[in-house]
Length: 118
Image (tube, rainbow, N blue to C red; front, top):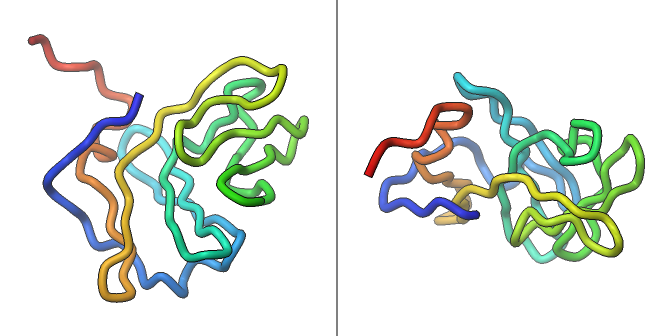
């Protein structure tokens, strides 16, 4: 499930994230992995593989997916779902590039918090 937002946080220059690489954004409830693809798209996901909680930010980015460094699970950067025969999903967050800056949705600040009623 992807939470959407209308409010954005400017967190880094696009060049602070290497192509086909990742970085970690620490927030109050945990860590978010930021990824940059070879064609400069950015994605934000929980930094915990659904298998054994491996640090996805240290994985290998290929196309629109990342391979967990612990057990080679492949996770879609677009949906957060495990690909192939594996099952599981991580939360995804809004992310975009504007004027060479990486922006993430403010919903990422609620990481680890209980959902609001209603």
